[in-house]
Structure formats: C-alpha cells, structure tokens
Length: 339
Image (cartoon, rainbow, N blue to C red; front, side, top):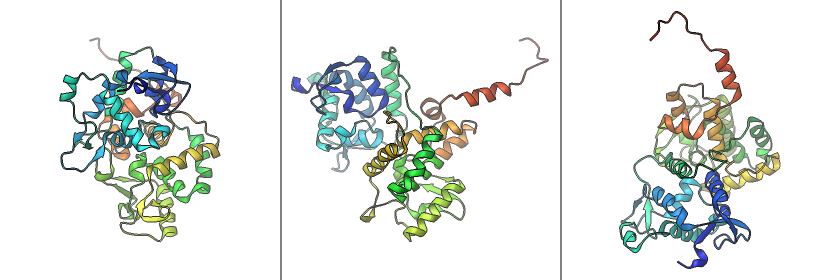
C-alpha cells in the first residue's frame, strides 16, 4: 500500500466511540481518504484488528451474490462518515485497506478475499460492533469519552416532531414509529401495509428486514396507530405497498440516505445541536431507557432485541429520576437472622 494512504482520520468515520478513540490517539495531519486537511489521523494498521474481528462474522459468498465488505460494514453499523459514504468506491477501498493493514503475506493467505462479496451470517449481529469497540477501549482505558452513545432528549424529540411534517409527512410518520416502537430505522422504513394491523393494534417485523433476523409482532401505542391510519388514508395504499414509499417511485421504499437526510435537516430546523452519534439510533436508546422499569423479557420483545445483555450494555442509560425513585421506595429488611 502506498505510504500516502496508510492513515485515516476521525472525519472518515461516523461511529462516535471510534471517532473519540482516534481523537485521543491520533496525530494532526491531512487525510488521503476524505481530503480533510487538519484532522486527527491514525495508522490503518491500528484499525485493522478491530475491523477484521467484525468482518469475520460475515460469510464470503461463493455464489456470486452478496455485497462488498464496505457496504456490509456501513449498512449494518453505519461505520463511515458521509464524506466517505457518498463515494461507494472510496468506501470499499478504505474498508479493504483497513482490513489488510498490518497483515503479513503469510497471514494474508488465511484471510478471506476482502475484495470479494460477503453475505450476512445466520448468527446475531446486534452487538458485534459494540462489543469489539468495548474491547478496543479496554486496551486503551485513558479515553475520557468512553461509552458516549448520545440519546435524544424528550424536549429535542418534541422539537423535531413539531417541524417534521414540513419536511415530509413520511418523515413525521417515521419519527413517530421509530420513537414509539424503539425499532431500528432500517426495519421501520421497510414496513409494508400488510405488516400493519390497525384493528388489533400490532405491527409485524419481518426477519428479512431485521439486522438480527428476529421475526416478531409487537403491540403498539395509540399514537402509532393514529399516525399510521392517517398515512394509509393519505396514501390510499393497502397490501404489500410500502408504508414509506420512495418519492417518485412507489415500488421502492425510502432509502437510508433519504431518512438520514431528513434527520439532519430536522436537527437544524428544530435547533437540536449536531452531536456525533446522535441520529435515528438515539431513539432506540431513549426507548430502552424510558422503559427500564419494564421486565427485560417484555422490553426486549417490544424493541426487537434477542439478548437482555445487549439492552443493558448498549442501550439503557442511568438517570436521576429512576435512581431517586428507587431510593425512595427502598424497603428496609428487618427480622433477618445473621448469615
């Protein structure tokens, strides 16, 4: 690899904790990948082990079908920044360069062909990236911003909701559904009207649209049902039509690029500060935290998690209100014999 491309910078990535790690350990310099002139840069060889551990969960495709490893990393984990993502070829070249960085030619023989195509594994993906990021931090405990997965406040959500329809009725609907159900925006935008049961107050979440292939059906709030009922009447759509049809082509769902653009424009209009990592997924953290009093088994099902530990480790946040309530209701134990 050319020495000119053996580093990447904090502006190449979207993941908040990875960005924090790079800023903690990087050196000032220019980035050959995203063209930033004054950024924090780190050698690709320092990123290689992290990315290779994540990449190993994917299965190389021998049938000709599948996606590039750069696409898989971005689609599943939102790893790369807009600067990189807007050029898929550059995204893929950067992903391959990181994955190959530091490999000895002998080791390279044992690695998959990262320039090939890959498919999702049958196993769960839910916390694979988060778990490996945590491992990276354990090796570098000096990082002060460790664990900084931001969460949208209720005031910020209300402010974005108030201006959402001015951007698009579909954005308003997506915001309500994502907030009220706690589901990933990737699953929300791929809903079909046949998945919505307004009469019984339920939504079916299809396995093929879920990152961990978790097929389930959840009860939803009246707020969601009213929003969906209104949208269905406006769209005059039924059956397998998309709940979130792409503008100009109702045969396709809204793209992830469009829903991200809506979010970023809404932040500006609502006066919500732009914070690294504060995006659609922050609504999922908000959902898990606001419902932390709910039995974990029910919460996991409501939000589409399979493993309770994922909720505890990656999504729920401590808050003063809950802690005060816990102390106020503390029950003193009396009459117990010594152990």
